[in-house]
Image (tube, rainbow, N blue to C red):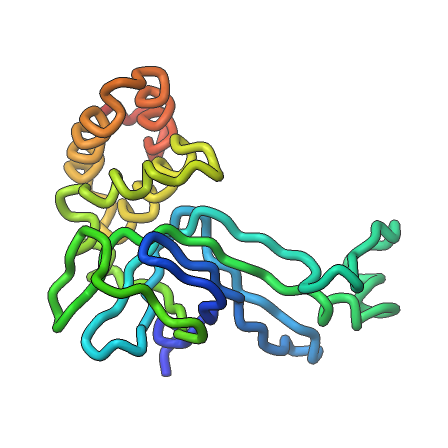
Length: 210
């Protein structure tokens, strides 16, 4: 099984508009817990229990902490290497949650850029979306309107991060960025300052002008 088709998380809470998933930990070369965390603004696919329907979502937050109120982490003044050597159990007491906004779904092989007919089920597995899936769900940029509904993080940061991630899946084509800028001008037409902020953040280098 390729790394793309290995689950990175498991759904622990879901709705039509978004999911919370717990990252799956594995052991590193030293036997210590190791958790792969998805990038902010990256694209996920949730394979649902509903036959023929998979959900596509964008990561808008990643949180690591204690799973309960009893085993709370404390500042110990030790480096990570010291903690691994002297108190390795600390890392086993942490869990990482991924919060993602639903931007579309796949049904019978077709990709749709609107909310799905059913939400994922708890315990459904979460995967990194493939480049082809990202290209299809970002074509036309309708996904930006659903990304813009997130209020728990700055909208300009999330919109620009998701476009940067999609840009890579589109083989870093300049025309994709131009079209993204045009789409953003419609989504944020009533917030010029935010629009300018996003356009500045999605440029891959300082010399590129949209």
